Amino acid sequence: MANHKSALKRIRSNETKRKRNRLQHKTTRNAIKDLKQSSKKSEIKKKLPGVVSMIDKLAKKNIIHKNKAANLKSSLSKLLT
Image 1 (cartoon, rainbow, N blue to C red):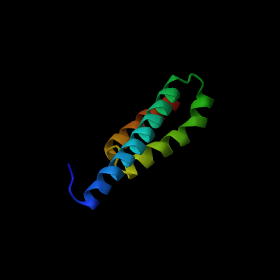
Image 2: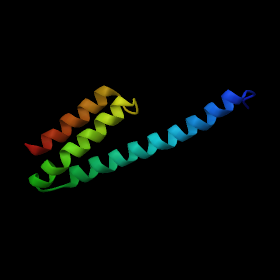
Image 3: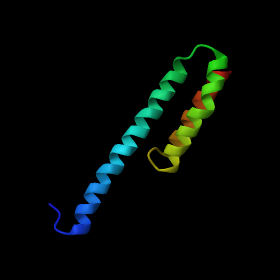
Image 4: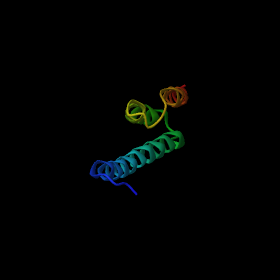
C-alpha cells in the first residue's frame, strides 16, 4: 500500500481516469458496431462523421493507438463504397 499522500491521490485519480477511458472506449466500440450493422448508405453517411470524431478523440488521448484509429477509419469509410 502507498505511504505518501501524493501516492494515494495518484491511485484515486488513476482509477477515475481508467473508468472514464473504459466508458469512452466502450461507447465508441458500440457506435462502430451500430455503424457496421447499418444497411442504408444514407444512414452510414450520416453516422460516419460522428464515429470518426470519437475514434480521433480516443487516439488523441492515447486510449487507442493512432495506427489502429487510422485502420478503423479506413475500414469504416469503405462501407460507403
